[in-house]
Image 1 (cartoon, rainbow, N blue to C red):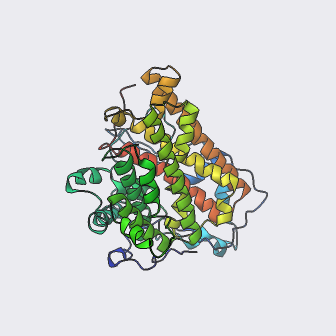
Image 2: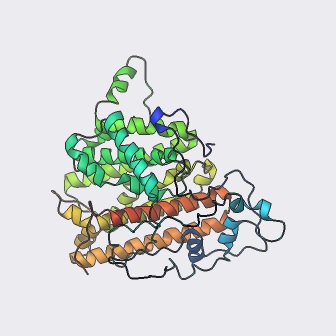
Image 3: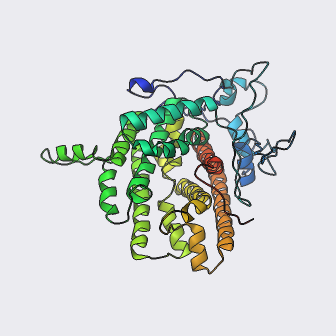
Length: 447
């Protein structure tokens, strides 16, 4: 099981960075004994679960109102006595200080004159969308991740030509990953997720969409790229040709390099889990490509089924590796855990449909997204279809939170609770990136 220290044999530029001025959040110890909960535990509701996960954060609309008071995420945000909160906080009362995991990892007291808060990023949330605001990502980490990932993209894998540099910078992947993984113990851990995210987008852009992608022949390209993360085992005669092919284009170079870093830090079980989820992703790509080739507009339920595979699932499912611990394979494989992960991926992917709607309408060709499919299949106007898609997202988000709360109550083990927190943080950070990335996204004029 990986700990929160240095990550294997990384290249020189990947050495752990010194701590920033802003202390990291306390890191839970995965092998610490499960804290004892006094009294019979009450089954936490989804609202109690969220109260334990989400600190009150206010994202003001520009210009910010003067002296705006923080608004809790949920009506029960002040309910500090829920069962799940007691589980996360540990035992209380006389003689229990030494048993509390949280107390042993409290950050140092703040300086008498704390630094000024970072102003919130620009961007407007989709009206009516159910989401949870997040604190501004640590700017020191954002800058360092952004610097490292650009070095990796340009110098290690030669990911893009010079004319694509503005688009790469506009993706703001440093802010994205820091917001999605607030419990990552080091920048090295953040870089595990950042490289994989950039590699996945290179495959999507170059094979499927914006930069020379096409549905024609996609299956063959994806299969060969998949061998960069799930290695081909063959005879001595044919292995050299395969190895040479891994450097033949930018997506395969990116997949190979990002996966090499990942497997050095992850356990074999975590690596295999990621490979499985990437196979799911590639299956979703192929379904969408087949519909594009035949001009088929799927039923709404068919589209949502495709999006359960062509979605963000590979990203939150590695939250434990990025956090420096492991959710054991038997706990990850539980059906209720699989439901939580699937619903998280589904909800975050509809967020992408909603924020990228205008961008896709202005792009060449026809792009399937949930509002487009609802408009055609249910004979709705563009506005009504978009608002219906917001409702679909909200129902999925509520279902995710309820499923996570049920699992937290049924299996309150420290790695399960931490993993659920990590997935919820990824869901929230993913929305924040979409909301604030005004370089890529703008909202339709439906309100």
